[in-house]
Length: 215
Image 1 (tube, helix red, strand yellow):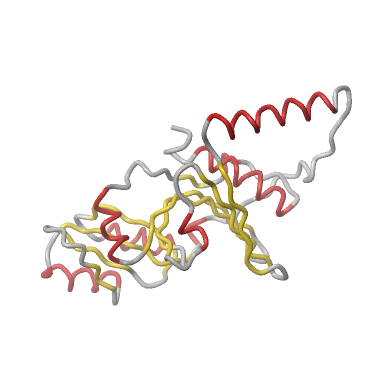
Image 2: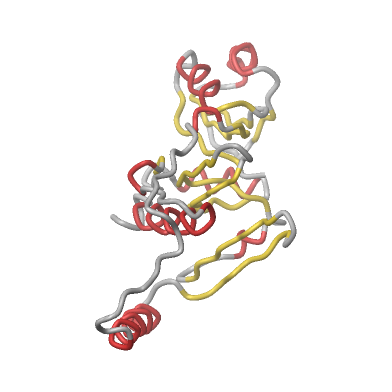
């Protein structure tokens, strides 16, 4: 459950966000969505779009505010995280001076887990009876509301080609995706905020699923 519901990724991005902003980021404040609603049909659409679906934990410095969330996203083949599979984890970083960098390695399995646990025990034994300084202050960071975050969305809706006009009347011009699945339509929206998408989705009947795009 910690993996498939995104709880483990949420705690990891809380730690990384705290290191990034030097304040205390509470994992309880991070919007978290797992992969339990992702189906085999979603992967057929992703393949048609030459993308992959990954559970991403994201944290961004927007200048005057910080944004963090955990959710499954579609990413393109060109994205460095596209090739992270099986028991491997990847951390992708973009810095204003560094540019793009990625850290990659085993993140699961009995031996990598045992190695990490033993390393922590040894580290604790080395610093017995001493205090370790943390890298961030105890001051809590107020995260930005994800409703204001903007992105594109992939959406699956029950219906056939006759529903396209209704969809575009609500969402505006969309990019249709045909994965050969009868009885439904797949499409990609333009860039909009999470709040705008939620409002438009409320007006649309028959939505099967939606997945965010990380461009």
